[in-house]
Length: 239
Image 1: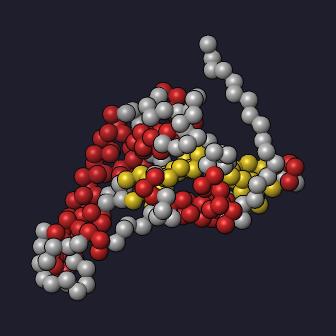
Image 2: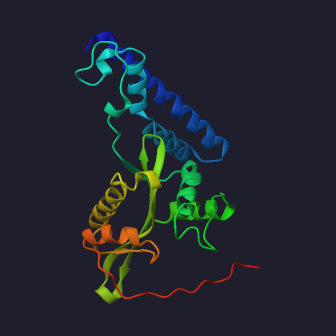
Image 3: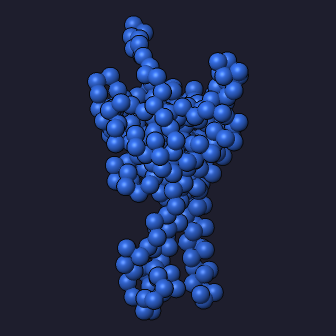
């Protein structure tokens, strides 16, 4: 790899990160976030920079060193030879909410009456802010570069019926339709179980909708077993 090519690639990545951070910082300020919130937004924007896309763009522009091994100098890059970026799982940011709501709606259970639609409502924003404040509740997104392809919500609580042991609950796990054959759901489950262990939990509970039979076999491969059926009461909203 030539020094000139390395320097050019590093500059491209640096500029992309700087632009993303500045834009996110300014946008967060316009939304009224405090300095800490603006900083977190900037860091999150840097994490979502699609470095793989930058590398591919440099390769297609003629940087032969960035092409897959074996291709001739300055030959075009076959997209099939570009490695899919690793799945990044991180805390959700406010700007992820439209993608999260769309994932929740694009689902068998999400399509039922009374479930969230694709629109971002005031209730969604209020819920997101409440989750951010709750120390035992986490909203996560899974990303390929800057693209959100999955989401889940984790909750942690001690349970007296288990002598005070902590339990983790996985709710609203959704993966984009195009990702369901790419092991993204498996990666989310693995991450959630590891997170539960890190929090000292003895039990992991999974909210699996009865209509999502296609996902049940995957859950069972992780050792989840069907527990007693639950019951639910839908309460009317205020007014």
